[in-house]
Image (tube, rainbow, N blue to C red; front, side, top):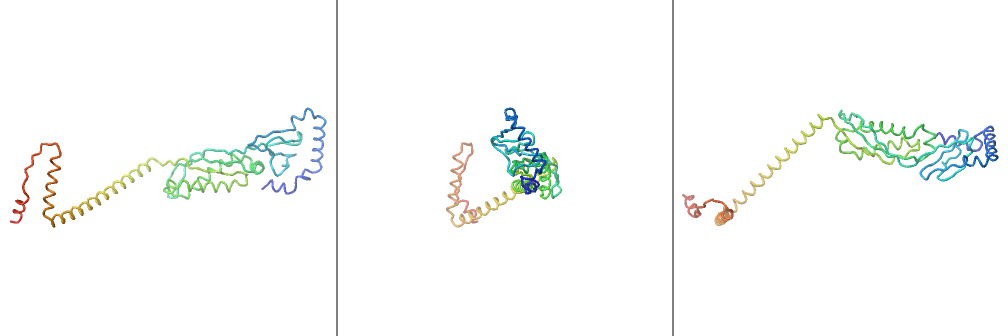
Length: 270
């Protein structure tokens, strides 16, 4: 990191002779104007904040100050406060051409936080804005390697891949990407109609196959029943009586003329 190279020289002696002279003069000034400058020398940062101190343009320590109260020199020191809370932002809808040449519009949401306050100040101009831009390009790059079926079915895998890529790219900026989610995938209207027609045709084909299988099973059952009835003549008589019982149970005006099965069998032999 840039600030690591500066800190490798050591905070002591890095200011030079002129720098130390200015620091000493600033200390003397604070001493003689103590009742007034006390309100300028002490700074307070919240629990969720950290302060990066620059002394004559150089970072004074490897670790950011805070939370709580700390002391600075008013003439030579300046501070930059960094918020450590998790930040979320929406990725604007991106028009993306998938691997199988289908144009889709995809948006998402990213959650990140500052893990290294000094790196987020020293290594990048605006860590928040840079992360937002990088998230947009990463979304386009990741989805450009997927086909439409993978985009629609594997959102979790795409989000995990984006999170890994973003986390690796923003590590030098002191940013930790905690979570990435794909919110919505919008398809062209013509493609939606085509997919709906394809799904409807597929459902109709499955329904016809199921109906054909049912008819085949029913025919097999009827064949087995006919074989059983053929082996036992009394079974046909029982089936005849059962049919009469079923018809008589219903309230209708149907007139039944019973005909003995023996007479029918006699004619069937002739």
